View (cartoon, rainbow, N blue to C red):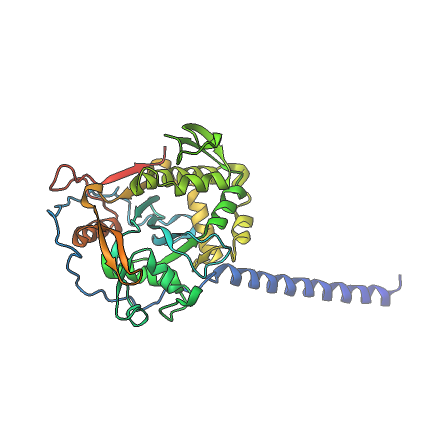
Amino acid sequence: MTKTQKATLAVLGTAAGVLILVLGLTGWTVYTHWLDQPLGAALPTSPYEPIPLPATWTPTASAALKPRSTPIVAPTAAPRCGGPRVMTLLLIGSDTRSTGYTWGLSDVMRVARIDFVTPRLTVLDFPRDLWVEIPYISDNLNGQDHEKLNQAYLYGNPGDGFKYWDDPSAGPGLLARTLDLNFGVKVDHYLAVNMQSFVRMVDSVGGIDVTLPRRIGGSHDPELQEGAHHLDGTEALAVARDRTEGVFSRGDEQNLVLCALQKKLKEPSVVVHIPDLIRSFQGSVQTDLSPAAMGQLACLATQLPRQFITFYSFPEDLFTGTRIYDPVFEKPVFVWDVDFNVLRQYVTMFQGGMWPVAAARPSSIPTASFCQ
């Protein structure tokens, strides 16, 4: 090989190296930019200013709540997984059977407080049959500004001529505003999952293992009887949606499913595929989380001690079933009669990292369940 040929190869090799470096840096920049981009419209930055609300109905005896302190954590401790110190996430289960999010009621509504320092996960369940004020809907409903809580999600989404407010956060944004207005709930992000995506989520991790305390919904499916089972996505959905024992019992069964999912995410065979799982669900969920934030949450899920995962519910005896006339449906509908001021106290303590352990009435015991 002549000196000229060697020189030419050296120049070409150097140019190729520079080109590869530039392409690599460009690809990394695009990738990191994708990681930080929210997968959906963010919640409005200006918080909704709730007006002081009286109780929706004549209240029964109000509960005097006693807070429980959270574990003390050194203020200098760094958050795990690169997350914020605390994130509050609105979790929504849509009852739509389609693949999209243009319509559907919010069948499940929970607020999750994720502490990246302790670490700890606490989740508060909101019954769907609360009769609440929903902002921005009165112009579309002939002046009516109250409806069931699960209607807020439907009215904010664009399907079937709804989208009663113009913010791009759509149904999740209007539901977040409604929770703020009525109960003082403040959330940072939202995540909505429809039934098909939930089934895919469970199937993508290879199913889940649960021990059912009773037969589900009178089903004859062998996998839905009392006892230990390995459930696929369709079976897990049947457990999560079962209401034969009432809405409060339904929450307990959903907790079983969520605990089983968290346990599955800690398995080594699943952990290595978490980034791929996150990418596969882009477009299948309705969320303003970025892939990076979802990665932080998945990372924390693998590190959470199970005893630090707690599901809270409002005391059942605060709620009395009744009916109220709904002008939209032109008939009486079932709703819960409850003192909203008491629920606000619970929400305030929950968001502050505390949960009451006692109440004025002995029967008003706040409920909590833990992952076993």
